[in-house]
Length: 173
Image 1 (tube, one colour):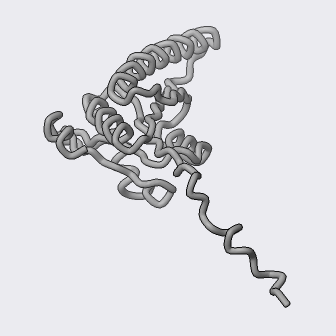
Image 2 (spheres, helix red, strand yellow):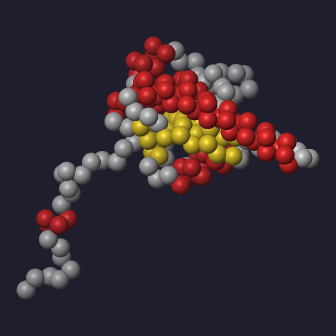
């Protein structure tokens, strides 16, 4: 008599035709010079691993305006600026990887929006940040995610040193 709980080994064998999930490298877009290092690293790793790049631009809230119309106009201008920057970076990503990146524009606190996007998009598998070289420190996101925020991440964090040169970066990726 066969065991009704035991399953047929053919049914539980891994499907050799199933493709592994695509690795998505998330880069947070800002105005820092380190952005180019993080973006290049993510693109080169995505290209070599068959992955993709995702770009997140977060519009941080400004001071409270007295007039709603002025606040709405400013928000529209910030969104247009964000979209222009993302389109320019998308061309760079396409040139380096041969694929188009996923583009995200959000409003709010940058670190909160990074965490929210990672939780909402299970396909995002690695957060790539580049460290600043200023005496003030590596940058607010790296400071946060290497301290209290690390426990909130469900994915690995890759930090690209801000002082690395392009040739050295290309050599290690």
